[in-house]
Image (cartoon, rainbow, N blue to C red):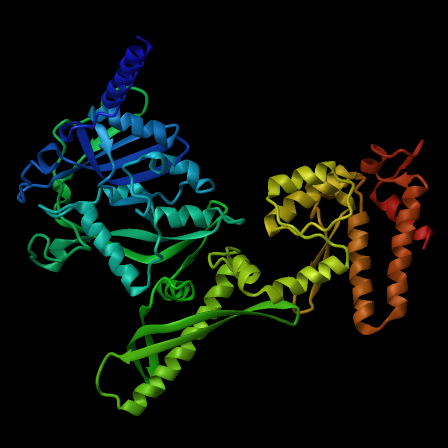
Length: 552
């Protein structure tokens, strides 16, 4: 009896599991061909390019005389909610196994791409190697581009993107690559930016429909159902516009966006993008122009090898590119000797462009899309260990941490460390530290350049409220300690550079006189409010400076 009961239970479990794993019929699916994501103050807008019911499925004959795609769009607080609205609106299961591309609007927050793209990561139908591109404006605008009759928009779109990648002027960007890049410490990555330009066909003379190839598009059918359905989010279904049927939309990729910490920090032109792809081994082909004997000549490039070299020079990390290029001249008017000379010029030119591009991205945009930290740590251990050994000998522990963790450490720390910040983080966090220790007016900022230039200034800048009172002739009690120490720092450095000991001694005496004045209980109002000295004397700005002068 027990054995019979066990078999009954097994049978029921198998039956339930089969019923739950029932495959979805193709007639119950809506085939998604492209997904657009835009974010703004209203929430997340999802735009889907989908197959029409009469143009989807292996059992349906596609009518080449009609377009077989349409657009729907919904807005909700999150991406997943917007996708649910799309699914509810269509009444079908959204099948994204045919999806060709994910288009991201330029205003979309990319600080957490895993969360943004979680729908695709979790969906078993999705291809993780799907292309991701950025729209110059909005993804919705790009997916609504008018298309030639009888074509599938995103297949043509993908061909255009692939064309630019083959030329080396677009950054290869699959979803997996993009997410992995954004997992790095500075969350840096790069994406091709797709631009959409419209041209009036009537100004170009009569042209046949679709004659201008994959980069252009014609008219698109309107959806039969019209406006949105359901509640909750903003819904929209759209098609073409007959009044715009005389316009052709041209898709191009003229730049690539550099992203760091979820924001666009800069752009790469086609030549710079080609250099990035050469350095990262993402392409072996490209094109450039070179000036030879007074005329510009187009040259096809084939990369034979590239190797990144890192070295320390004058206490700085220097990045060099060892690049070998085969250059093929466009025309046949040059002799073999000329072609060899052109090849040498091109190779030198490309190496210089690669190094300039690297410096621009790393030091101007502050984005490590080359994964330089990993390169140094794994492939140039001598460089890594040279700094590591120096730190260990000095008893210094070096580590990298995110800004939120750094702030938490500062709040509970008693000091004893150097905090190296990015520029904006340094501006904000140094004000926080100085305020926590008493007054922003006690902090001096020192700027040091690699070329030996120095600038000393009061970190707080102009105290606007006090300045306006001063203009009215009113009395102020402005703390001038930071300004005084900015001057003493500058004078001391000038004395060091000129070998002027008297000037250096004066700077030391002025600083001591300032500190002695405060410790004697004579101070400005901001310090009097927080001091532990009993019965301090509150001085105005002029009285405080005179009190310091008496102690010099």
